[in-house]
Length: 443
Ligand code: AMP
Ligand code: GLY
Image (cartoon, rainbow, N blue to C red; front, side):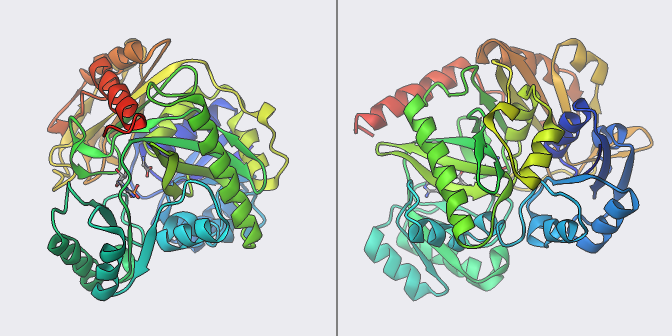
């Protein structure tokens, strides 16, 4: 089968690796010279991924049988619609369905209208008076988000990034005047307290087949401190749960994803593709922080490295329907993914710097390697402003998987940063204790 894969990050390298494992011949459309994707693909075109017409032309010229889109920006630009109109089965959602990610106000309003569980109190507004009113109504314990896409970096949380009403108003004003996220509109929502987790599911418009839960780490610095980033690393547990996550909480999250897919269908925009739910386990159970219309990055590296069934077949069924739970199997193993990022990532990345990656040594450590937003020129690898490479350890326990990932990291060098705390036992135990005390109502 000939498959188009769009995007040039580590998530897309993991997608391409999973497609290749299932025997597909991959045609890649990406903006950066990702050496992992370029090597695995039969052919690559280096284009602006949001230029739907160009990508569709490349897909048609190569007579692909299936398409998978990695990042959200091309979905917002209507790429899945263009591919579908060209008769290519596409395992990614239409522009309309992708609004569940691309418009945070659409998502909150959809949940409210269709009484989807796990909703939070929120207000959508385009002026400071509206923000003030929301604070009068909800108190200062709120989060302020631009409604549009910001690559996971546009959210500010009271008590961390904003300390007073003035700070909240000042950030809202910044969003309005700089049109952060593309529109001068904000969502003010209730601040949730708990531990975050991700559940991703394969969806064929109706049926939802969930993947193991994963925990990402969005903050740039160790101890979950510092600015929000695209994600610094992630882990999953052998049984598909997480150390702090109980079976019924996971099940409730899956039910919320199913309700969201049903709500989209009721709105006339069936969801085909991977749907990503980010949740906070709170005292009252899981609540929705956001939905993404795609795999998570880094979470894709965890789940796709564990997928043992035929990914191309799953994608074909997501596109065309008929997906069943028996199409999807995962290895019963733990996984730990750690991202290598350029120095300064989160504030001001050092881009254009050479990094050295010893692929043979990483493979000898038993780890997997996924290239992210780097460029290969003349056999050398250079950073961009975004994340550089992900390493993944797979083992019986999170602890062993973490050691494998750490050993692999020793073979990447340059002006880089890494969060070594991700997946370490001390950090996991602290999360379990924190969650237990929140459940008991003491936090
Ligand atoms: P998002 O881009 O919506 O995923 O938000 C980025 C990060 O902001 C999340 O991973 C959370 O850590 C934090 N965040 C977003 N919404 C909330 C909320 N309602 N309550 C608490 N933290 C939040
Ligand atoms: N890991 C967060 C994201 O993909 O948005």
